[in-house]
Image 1: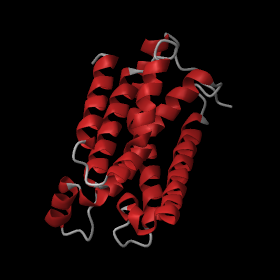
Image 2 (image 1 turned 45 degrees about the vertical axis):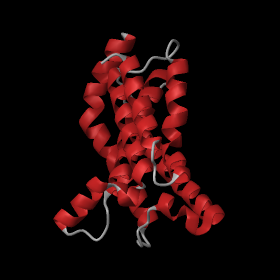
Image 3 (image 1 turned 90 degrees about the horizontal axis):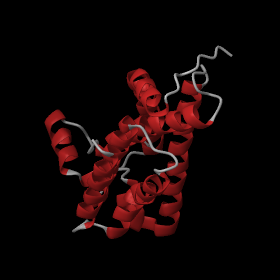
Image 4 (image 1 turned 120 degrees about the vertical axis):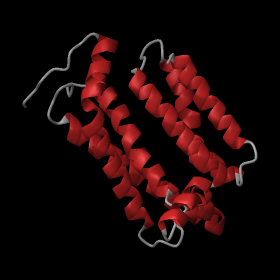
Length: 207
């Protein structure tokens, strides 16, 4: 799929999700990463094009954020269906969103480190990628805490804790699992895409 099409799908998804969103503030807080990231990718494309794999993942992540922002994560209909079908005690879309929060950024971090640092092919690439994803997840939880302090009960839809006192820990754990799964499933495919894009084979560094 051409990069412009990926960008168009993400932009349309964000625009549609904004229309009739249940809470405009929550929509903005949930989708701000895509709202900022999409223009950055477009502006930097000539100097730093991304692999098609990463473009597809970023587009999918933007749509996940858009859907959660439109309904709020605790009220996404698909999550309600999963909850009712499997007898869960909460809407699991928030957990899915945090799993994606680890899965997609893992490829993003891996691509940036592979192309801009000496870590390409190093055995440290995978653990440092996971650490970066977990750090991002922790920063996001701190932002949620800040939103709660500022907004009080008005931030409940953004927090989507659904009464779970361990929600913060679960969110970071889901991001961790997502990052690890991403590296296990996509590293080889990603190396091939990087080779096709840059023309440079991954170096092997045992140091």
